[in-house]
Length: 638
Image (cartoon, rainbow, N blue to C red; front, side, top):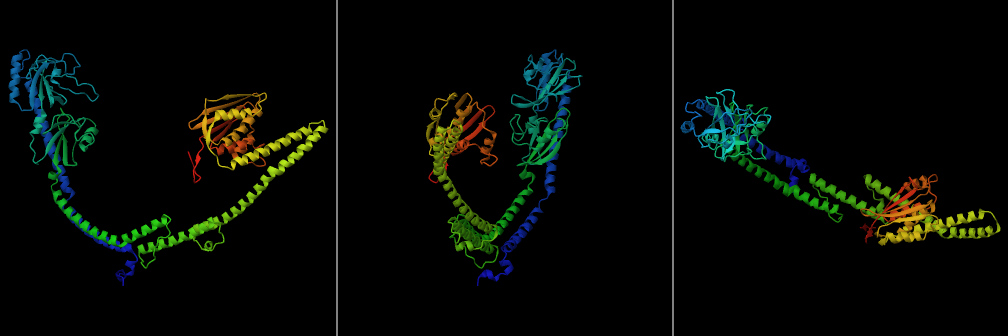
């Protein structure tokens, strides 16, 4: 007994139930383990770490604000120092050097410059009267201080309303160091004391409670890095041009550059807290960066637990994969190969119909029935193609719309063949009558009419002769068209500039002037005989109906040539063009002869396009391209 038969029929008949049961057990294990691990980590831990880093950034921002405000006060007090006497350069520079040695490392130079007497001034042309950097006598621009711009883009005015006011510059690069300057008028009111600072020195000296923490100070307008611990002094995007962090976005989006912002975010490799420097003189933003491995140390435990969870998942799904592979997958692959063979037309593929009753067994049974269905359709199609309408295979029932279509196709094909045979018989009879009987009768009529003309003086006999010639011409043209259209085109190289003059030489022009506008040569791969037959009709009609002149031109196109045949005659009747456009003639809509049909059918046979212009006379436009070559299987290729 097959071991599969020991299972209940409900499970045997529904493979999905088996798969669902095993998957459910594995899912329960994964969910239970994941829940136990996830409970160890909560959003509160992450939020607390973010708050901690933000608090660290806030503390550093406040310290930087206190330091900066203290330095502003120091510069204001030093500007009132008795030793700062601009009229005594030696005394003043000695005082500047002494005070520079006493202050913090952030202050790197002191200068006394003339206070601008004319406004506005951007603080570049004022003369330095004393300096700790030996710049006395130089213009203030020698310090490279940038006093910045207003919100409207204008330079900040280097001016002071009183002797206690201070002015803070933008951050600028001075000899490879990011610098900022503070200025305050001296007590005499005619000069200004300026101190230059390297805030990076202070940023580098910050102490952090967490190892690996780094401090970055961003500008309040662009979000570019200005001061950074253990980093080169240069203006650059915080995390590169391609990355825009939350703090950069908030800097750029705030309503003005001094609006306070604060917050924290998780980056790719670190936790970032940021806070604006709460000082009216600057718009800096302090950013504290703590490595994720430090700030979120609990995640290490989570990773260990997740590794165990992944291991459980792999084992569980390994069991599922093994069961699926050695069960339905192997059977489905076999069915797939068999179905692919049937799809490719190989009806010899064996598809057994076994006793398996689950979904895979049902699929195999369905495929077996589908193959039998296709085989029946194929047999019937072969019999219909061979016109064996009485074969027993056509009696096999094919259910559904396909079976109905097969019956309809068989009936329609039978009727079509019987109609076509009758039509070919009629055409053969009509053609024989046109070739022999009609022409013979016309010859008899002509001979009798000629004798009648010799015996009478009226024009009636001449009219009969003209009509007889016209009917004979139509018969000749019909035979020529039938002969040409019945054969496949045979492309050869033809020069249009030679063919058209040759055809014109065979047409009696009488009082009509024929003008030609040809290029030096116009060669084309086409059927020469069909081409001559096609062009004969429009050339004859143009000469026949023109009042005084005919113009024939050949123009090059993107892929061939366009032949234009124009005359100043009365124009082609609209009814004839309508019949031509409709592709058929009726008792109410028909032409007077075969000339236009000869032109249309010939142009179609040559793969060209035909159009007419009848506003002033008639212009026939025939566009031709190289005729395609016929391959062995009957298709045409260029």
